[in-house]
Image (cartoon, rainbow, N blue to C red; front, side):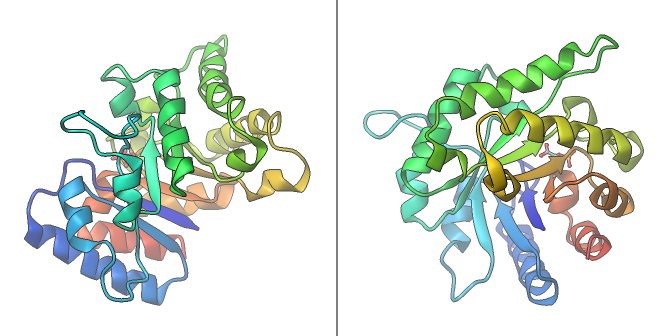
Length: 247
Ligand code: PGA
């Protein structure tokens, strides 16, 4: 599975970051998952490219700017040259800051141009009985996929993250059967842009209160290729327990 540790802004000391990275290295050695660590930028600088590390690193965001006089922007080229392989793009916590589907497409393009794999986050704010939320997810996927070349589409990872399930606890996360339904829907939408067998190579992962207690059931029933883990990834023992649970 692809398991992405989205540390968000939970980790704010080098000491804690080191403990998490050391533990993740051990997990990578013991379990054959692709573990991607997505810390905040200063820690990327600290850890990426370390001695023969099997760990893969990702950014939590990437700038839509290519380069130039844009103070504070972290460009895809800068990330790539530092050894970053993945970028979380369009996370709901960034969409909430005003990020639009158009900006998200630009960010995906910037990442793809330098060989960084975008993890495109999609998900509804809430559910309604009429099923309008499905249209929201369709728009989020379509606005990016339709603008990419066939080759670029194949590089994408899609993370389904229902916003109502983020940052809660396993009890409030999605039910495995509801997840399975959504993943089928998401694959159907992606299938309008990626054809034949290639569709199976697009990884769809789940995020939203994935914890050690629910991850196994979600993995078993949900038809997913991995997880985007938030709060549980910023805690050494919780993250280790989650990896064990899905192994
Ligand atoms: P959570 O976050 O696991 O804390 O719900 C997931 C995410 O937002 O990526």
